[in-house]
Amino acid sequence: MTIAAAAFGLISDGYQNNLMTMANVVLKKLYPKDYTPDVSTRVSNALLVGAVLGQISVGLLCDRIGRKAALVATTLLIVIGATLGTAAHGAHGSVQGLFWFLTVARGITGVGVGGEYPASSTSASEAANEKLLKNRGPVFIMVTNFVLSFGGPLAVSVFLIVLSAAGENHLSTVWRVCFGIGILLPLTVFYFRMRMLTTQLFRKGAIKRRVPYWLVLKRYWKTLIGTCGAWFLYDFVTFPNGVFSGTIISSVIKDGDIKQTAEWQLLLGAIALPGVIVGALLCNPLGRRNTMILGFSGYLVFGLIIGCAYDQITRIIPLFVIFYGLMQSFGNLGPGDMLGLVSAESFATSVRGTCYGLSAAIGKTGAAVGTQAFTPIQTNLGKKWTFIIAAICGVSGIVVTYFFVPDMTGVDLADEDEKFLQYLADNGWEGKVGDDGDDEVLDDDMSSNSIAEKKA
Image 1 (tube, one colour):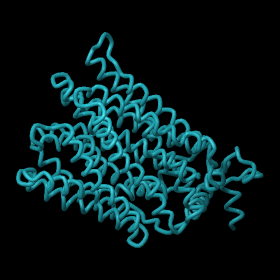
Image 2 (image 1 turned 45 degrees about the vertical axis):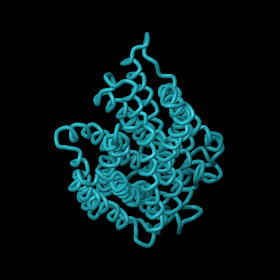
Image 3 (image 1 turned 90 degrees about the horizontal axis):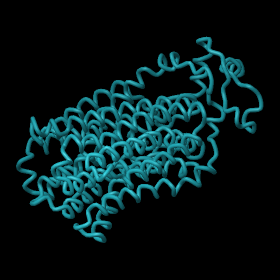
Image 4 (image 1 turned 90 degrees about the vertical axis):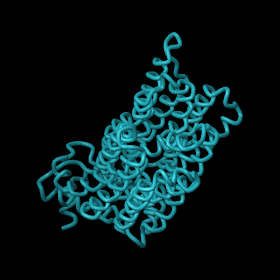
């Protein structure tokens, strides 16, 4: 239950991440003059800015206060942000006021969505390590990235159902109902999160006071370059291509029909989803690092194919959507699956949330930069260059992964905890280790020095 309660809430993150895909198309249809590319980018980027803040702050929170408190806080933030977004209105009917209201609401949602990454992933990896060590990687991927990626097709499916029920003459109702359903998803796991137990690894390995961040940086600087750098490159490509994929598909469809755009968008999401499962199957036999390299290679191959033959491929919409979907599928297979897993495995329990949150925050920074740059790239260089740049990011991702990302396949997370505490003791750090709130596990004070002495 701990694994499911920790991670299943990520479906609401996937839904929120992809909510603007069709909402951008609808708002552009409703407000053709007011919903300019700059406004569209601002509303879309608000979630990313909030996510960066959430990933860093909640990453620290889940290490210093606890995983459960962080999970409950992120759930509440998503509910509040989604409620505000559903009820968004401008003062005196102002359209620009509506867009600013949406921007603030999406920002609040983003803090919750961003916070889910370190809070959910650290809890899920630790619980999986205790119960399913040999299959920790596949289990972690299926309860985190699969659920997260499923949010994309779910968002489009909900949109199609609501659009069919309300009709194209009530588009304002359509986008508000879609926003409203985003309130319900995090509530489905709220009860279970309130009842979940803290993992054994956190109880034994937490450092809540006098955290030696300089020593942490000295030990993990190389790994952080790998996780932060690869995540930046991945999100730089995948997020704008997710947010604006509806706009891209709409631009190659005759008359930009909304329902037809949504149907092709659903196919795109369905093609991309199996990559998550393939990545889960490969992460043990092939290894984390090699699987990530394989995924980045897909960006290189399909990015170049689509980019170099863009004018020809877009004349055949099914072929364009299939190639586009395969590019995203390789992204899911490699960095999409592996970055969360590697970031949850490579750091000691006491700083796992902080380092994971930092890595994910740098990734979301890449997403914000990519989203901000997406429209200027299309306008000034041409639409094909968004795919050629994806191929360049694929090459860069391969290099960063090969030289900086560790492979923790099959390694018990408790082993790294012991090595980290020994490292702290060797460098003269003294302090309490363990979660004071759980007397069943810790009957006496533990310090890095005392643990080192026991080992000796």
